[in-house]
Length: 148
Ligand code: IDP
Ligand code: MG
Image (cartoon, rainbow, N blue to C red; front, side, top):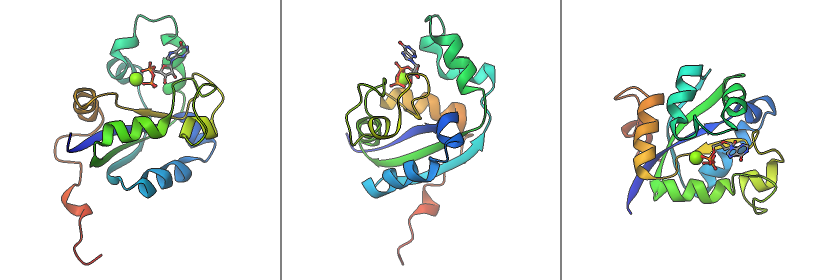
């Protein structure tokens, strides 16, 4: 419970389909706070580290080829129970099963090209954030201006 920071990736399909703004807007409107963001290409090595739990699964080659195929937007989002908040907003892994109102339910059709990644626990968030953002880069303090 309490305030958490979670990793969100806008996968290559979200970037290619020009949906980054739409998805970021949803997260902002929910009340989450953007504290880290970059456009980057995931290497094969990073894909293996990030998806370590899936490396032996039959779908991994397709997942790896997709996630490394073109740039992603990597972001850190902060807020009250941010891990659960983002997972709820993402919807089920398979967009065909994801509820309307969720990002995957509203915007996706394909199991691999399912638009977003969100950490599945605070422990995963800590591990994944450290893979994508160097120590000290996430800008918590810069995101709270008392005059706004
Ligand atoms: P999540 O993204 O909802 O956390 P995970 O089970 O962690 O789902 O799987 C990581 C990614 O691997 C999914 O987002 C999806 O793109 C892909 N994936 C997972 N299971 C399957 C499957 O059974 N077939 C094809 N792709 C899958
Ligand atoms: Mg997962």
